[in-house]
Image (cartoon, rainbow, N blue to C red; front, top):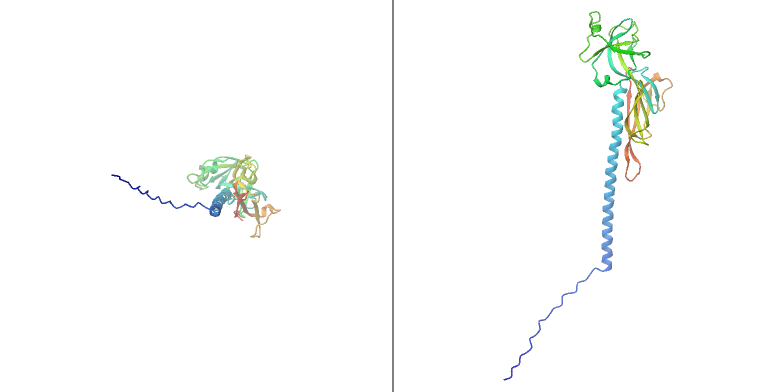
Length: 291
């Protein structure tokens, strides 16, 4: 018996569809889109960095101007005229700054006794007392600084029944020479002052930049208050009979009645994108006492 086996049919194998790759055109289009998005994102980051840097530098510049203003105004407001201003220029001002106020108790042959009002201890701690000034019958102050001396006094010299001046707690009784003229009666207003110079000049803390300096003329001690300033920072001047400041100081310094402060503060670092420091100008006016 002859048996025959039929060949088994082979399973059909279906070919998977061919997968297409990116064409050169598609690749180029994709690269262009990515480049555009990347460039836009980069521009946004650069803009944001420059914006925040500019804002930070503006804050620094404003803080420089405000710091100088706070220091100067506290002293310049106490300057009296006439004779309160010693010298003036566009970049500097020398003034007699009162730091202690009081009244005359009386004078002997060798010294005058003054009862001073309570003052901040810091006002007394700085050395370099220059002199005193007493107010005459016309309301003006006469300054006395030649051979000036200051020494502790006795409270009983003011509280005596013939004087009747009470020194407040925290106040001081001092004696001064030369004596106050005999024409000045007990109770005459008197203040003790220092001579202070404010000047824009080269900075030590920031070489190559400009700073505001304060100098006590009696001790010749200079201190750098704040820096940096732009070269445009300067003083302007108010004179008698005018409410508009002028660029140059008056020929007669006694006619000076106030200052306009042009405080052009600058940032420490250069601003991104400009290569120069940011400058913020702050303007303020101060008029002297007794004007």
